[in-house]
Amino acid sequence: MIYIPPASGGRQGAWLVSKECVWEGHSALQKTTCLASHYPDLGSFFRGLLHIKNADIDSMVLEAAKISLNDDLGYIALLFGTISTSLRDDPISQGTSGLSELASKKIFPVKYKCPWGRFDELRSCSQGDVWFIADRPHLRQSFQGLTHLLAFSSQQIHGMFDLLNFLRLGERLLSVAAAGSVDVSGATRKHRGYSHSLRSKAHVIARWASTLLNPASRATLTVVFDVQSCNRIGARHSSQSLPHDQVSRRV
Image (cartoon, rainbow, N blue to C red; front, side):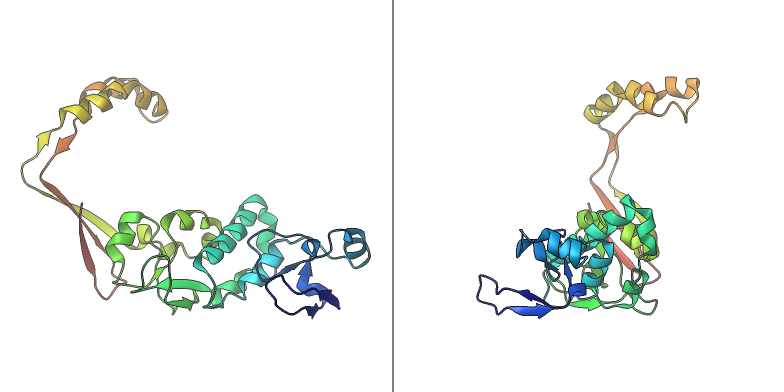
């Protein structure tokens, strides 16, 4: 047993078994005790004699399994992002015990009616538990309030793609699950300023696309960039998985 002194906030001390502790850990770990912060001069004792290890993906998975409704959304996003980074940097970690079991645990913050930055409930990602991932800002705007969405911002979601892919959540991405179409209203006309701007960059675009276009096609790039403007463009997104099968959004 290892004694953890009381925190400065007045909380009581506690006795923990060694497997509940790590020596040093990532800042994402808020429920795992890091002994280095309590006993910085006893590293040789804890690490050498008691074999307390530094935090690894196993530690993060154990902490993720403890996520509760009282946890801050930013903390959950940081923890998921850190796990995702470990999966990307160390593919061997995909064999971590318990990682695949996270799919069945209610640890995924989902929102429906609450404001962004908060979440309504924790859900699992089992097949019968339906919610979606708004991985694009415009899709987030289109579907909010119509279906249950993972409560993270699109930027946070992109930082945890490796974890989402490992848990086979790709089909829940709205960029995959939703189809889009564009409605143009009013007469169209050439926008000379944007057209000229793109044409001036044509040689750079042609160089970037050199592996895809033949020389004759690259030569035409200076004349095909015509940007059109109109009164209004409406984007419409639909998904057969939703009870409200079609959503409109004006741009």
